[in-house]
Image (cartoon, rainbow, N blue to C red; front, side):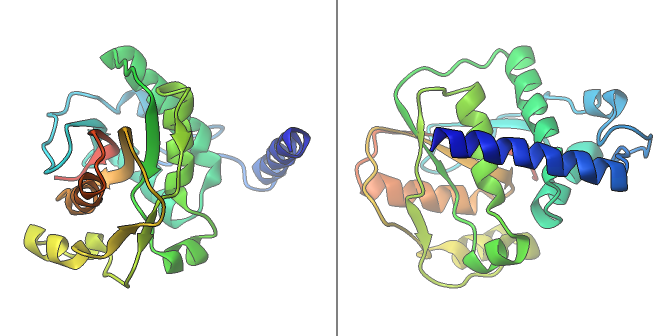
Length: 223
């Protein structure tokens, strides 16, 4: 299995090299050639953001603001356009955030991602939150395990299309369930935190199952 994983990593790198030749990289924000995100634009992502509160979550970590055009384009391009070429930049972003903010998290954690609608996964070709969780595990919680324990039991509207917090909460309420038991310390991963409806519903389900502590991390705050 390890050899297969190494081969898949090598194959992915070769595919990216071919794509770079066919479609030369250009910064997603300023357009300068040679980089998917140039140093100047990358450094423009700041981490001076107020920590939000979400019902049921003991502590929420947020990397940056969705209002920042570079961070917004990084996340939307990766999420909606299957831009896997941006994965290394997202990884560098978490490394920089950890270093500059001084984040340190101890304990025996289980990492869960907020559930993505299955139809959206089929449309995009992958679950974008899984790789975000892998970044967090590798850089912040190296001994944690990533578990796919959530399931959406009904179709919901995309929360991004709903502008009222009450509508988002009502849209997601009761739509998430656990398909395997989770205990102890749980670390929830989401891409963008706006109303906190999805993360809050995940926390409600986890609390009912007896989880001790829940922390969350969002790559951007959309409020």
